[in-house]
Length: 231
View 1 (cartoon, rainbow, N blue to C red):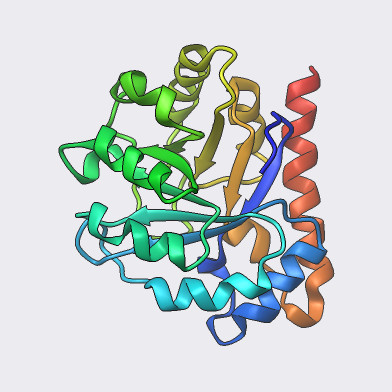
View 2: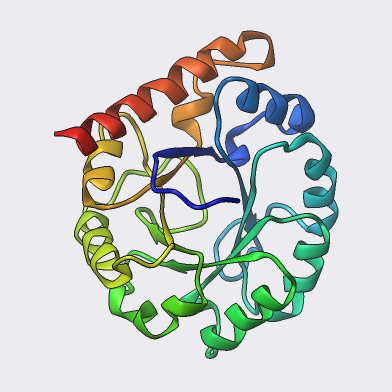
């Protein structure tokens, strides 16, 4: 994971065909996905239940890019080692998931993987100001976590701008997760985001047998974001 601020598209496999994860991962990567985003939910911190470490370990051999594991779980610390051992390249924990986000980020780094910190829509940017030096990425949620296909929350744009200003010249990615489409991607890209998570906007209309549609969707999001950067 070398660092640069180019636009990266990270399809969320929560929107993929659950019966064909390996083929779906290979299809999105072949069609231009930069990262593969894995949404881990516990039915407690968020109202949904998804992938445990064995599932993530099963995804790993199919991921040739970056496996980006977003832990929407609380408590988070007891599970960091298991997700690292499952093959995550980057693990993101929520600032809201426990009282000691500094310790959580230290624990992620101790596993030899990249560390991200996530902010829910109701949490101000300033909540991560004192842990940025432990972070490789800040994730700004532009929906309330727990479900795919939700409507983009526009307050995330100004939050992204604040996070970008706080980061300065440090090599820290800004990821956006929630309601990313060709219409919303330019808004966050212009504000400073470089990693865009998209679920339904990538997978809609396509399939493993019609993976070209995934490619069209990925290219549309990327082109819209890059155009906002160049204006």
